[in-house]
Image (cartoon, rainbow, N blue to C red; front, top):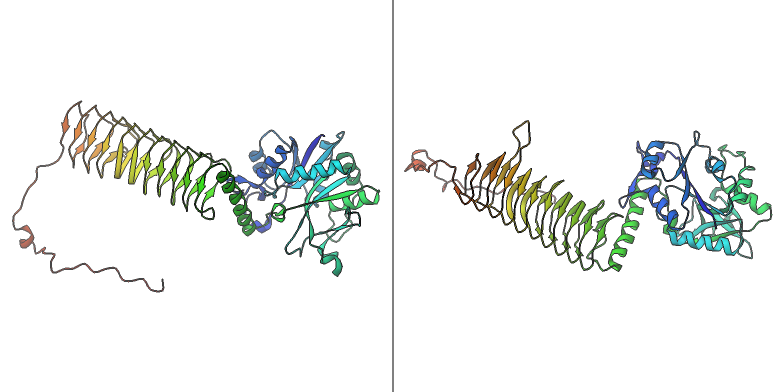
Length: 469
């Protein structure tokens, strides 16, 4: 069966209170409209047309060139939106799926089931419906004695008996394409809002003697997004789905309510994701890793058996069997090879660090090429910026850097050299050498007494206690 789709993505979304298109707002790492596009592709609706209007350039940028776009210059209702797609639908048979672009929870499984009902029942249209816990405000699906749809009645027009019905219209439809075009040509705007309603096509098809069915989906799948609260709610549902998917693939997620995983993230088997972890963008995590607690990775590749604790990493690569954190910061364009240790309060920026090298605490490595088996003592700083330009620091294999050392770039530390603690190194250090760059120590006897600097009489008091915490 030929399947195409019309997606309504022109609305301004005033309740969202944003300067951007509503349908490009993100949930679980993807724009709302991209979730819709993915579900349509999965059921074979590869030909899709998007009705765009407000901030159309943002929608076009998100969806790319593989779909068609039609501009709706005036927003005159849902029926008017679908009318704009009529040239796209002309000459087609089969089925047209019509749905809003802010329905990110609809799944391909539900669309597939609705299409199966559509085909098996020889329907002119099938509506995706749901049983709402509180149907107030929704249009109701009223069925006849055979279970077919008799009408859709809006909440404001429903009788008291009809308001007891909990089956609601999701605004997702499967139409027989020629019949949709026929019905669209006969709807009008003779209502208080002077708008063209897509629901009128259902009434027209039924009056023409055609059957209209309804497939009942889970209520969550029919949720739209009109404001920031609803965006948060669908984000939680999508995140829970993603967590369940990863757990079914062998990932241990300790607490899915505090773990946030974007749609494109990949995680290997037997990895453990601890609470408070954010995995963003195209992050790829290997097998048997431990990530978290309270870590944020964005567009990061992590090798097998690596542990990352209480740390932030972005647009970088971390090898196998590395130990990162706590409180490390791995910045973009950094490459950490296998068996590297980056410890507490260490920052790495635009640097490559060779296998088995380690910076366990209080160190900054910036614009550096670091070899294998290098040791950074506590407090080491690569001084890579002179106020105008960034300079590279080259540290070759097996270098030992003592604590509290400053490496003034550009500089090269050759193989197997040592840097004495407390040194400020301004020149290259040859292979197998020891570099010491510090002033001789001076002792001034009785200086404390002479300067009246005895501390024993001046106890430091704790900070004032916070009240009302």
